[in-house]
Length: 340
Image (tube, rainbow, N blue to C red; front, top):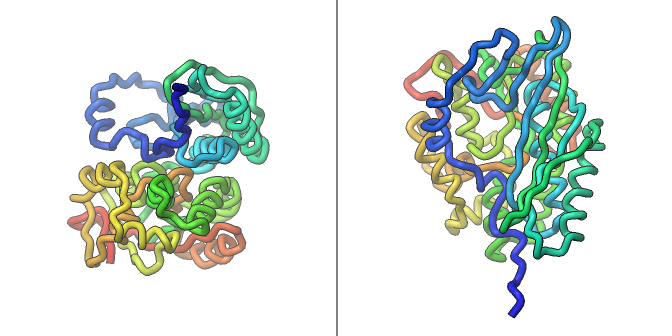
């Protein structure tokens, strides 16, 4: 009997290793001092930045994962948008991209073609050049990109550069991990899945172009560690933030699915690792799960000077995928994050 091909087994950023495991491994990796390495993995940033000249630095990143949707072309779009996002989170511009492919030799190669076409579309939309790649035979499908961008060395948005008083903006709704999980067990509505796909395929390029007009002190994109995990990394050890949960955008059906315990193991790993840094002043299990939910191709989390917050909010409203101002950075408190 021919083995049934199962394309979507549960992927996206829910497939990533937990922060706890990564921390234990990475702390043992030797660091080589190089004054031109402006951003490495010491700060849990989105990409590496290497200074080439006084006016030019290279932004380098890569990301890949298994499918979280059944349509190969859509999966290619999502995986590419997710990988490209790291360059935008640093404030850079995309230049080149390389495909990273794992694919079973027993599968229909037309599926692979659709994945690559979806990825190529997003690289083109980003203004980059798809310039090659690498593939290996594997038992499961995985796809992503290695992306190179450029940036001025003095205009880098480190993830931990926010200052007390800065306003925090999230440029996409949360909940795509929960919705995709519900979809795999055929519990998600068509409307919910369409909203999740629209968010995941939307490039952060457009929010990044807007934020560059204002005094942005820090930025990251929300992916596998969820909103609260990436926010913890933004705060570092010397700042805290207050989040007003009423302002946090999310796909409305995600709350229903969370209340039905259609959750991801990755969200529980996020809760276990980052939970002790969060003071929940709410009594809302479903919303907690949305805040810990790993996002695939999630939005930018932007720390902007308070005097620019209103203008930034007005411009972000013009984007088809809606975000919101969700909180404020404050002086260091007992917890890194207060959710009220």
